[in-house]
Length: 398
Image (tube, rainbow, N blue to C red; front, side, top):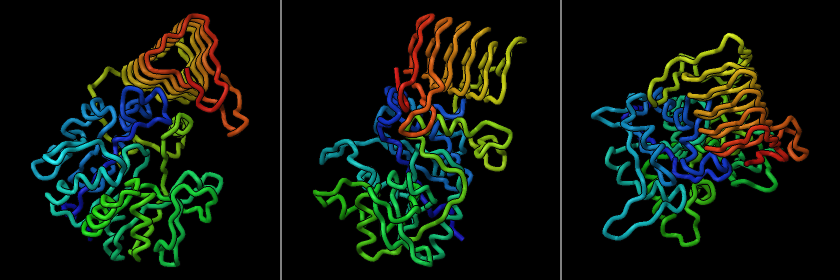
């Protein structure tokens, strides 16, 4: 059985999140709102808490202030302890100089002193921008039982989507025999989730060699894992059968929010058997007006709904006025939809005001994807009264 004090987790949270477009213009992707009241990173941090991982470093870089403020001392995840805890780890300079992190492997390499400080036997490397619930403790136990150098959490994807992932081939004992990062012609449907458990001594050797390679992109998927495989390292696949979403695009973010709705949603962040915690100040309960019509929607505290709300997710501080209609949409913090406006199939950025009688979004199908075209409205937008703005392609934006 693994001992929780022997594992240090590092959460990769420094990427720019360019595929989320204007939603990450002023904040890091892990700090983007999801499911109304949560931030995306809440799911990874809650997994650590529920798995008994007590020491967590969060590697930040791009627009880190809102993310750092949200995490604070980690009190809501019970990380504010004398032993272990949560630590924000931005790039830093020493007597030899310094620079921005130049890849996921470089970010971890430059924080090996942090890992060594705790004498960690295992290093758990995670992404801060995925939505899922996972018991890392079971994965670590299997990693140790099978005496692996590296264990990678994997799940099966449709072959049509396999080129978006790191794809693996396995032998009969679930050890990895081949790895290809985002292949043009996938030979397998077994995809990496970007959840890794390394033996710390193996990881240090790999990162040191990678740092000395001038041709490396310093990336785990492109460089570090293939290097270990070429050296005959024992790489174990750990199958995951739960819900998992990479919410790195506007389309996938919208779809994952829609997955929270219905009588039996495929993903339920409110399940008390595996609590998802979040920070932020407490708000008054949501309010629903006497003439409102709210169906199959998720309301956050501080929301005030007087119009029609259907198949939608609304964040704290949202107002939907009398006579307004919102369908199949995600409204971020403090959005106001004025009287008579209509919002459908949209992701509306925070602090946006939709003017009276405006028409936002459409129910058209993108011919390339076969999915609804999702309109992204930039944070802080002011949509004029009577304006008509429709999505023309996947994740169109204004």
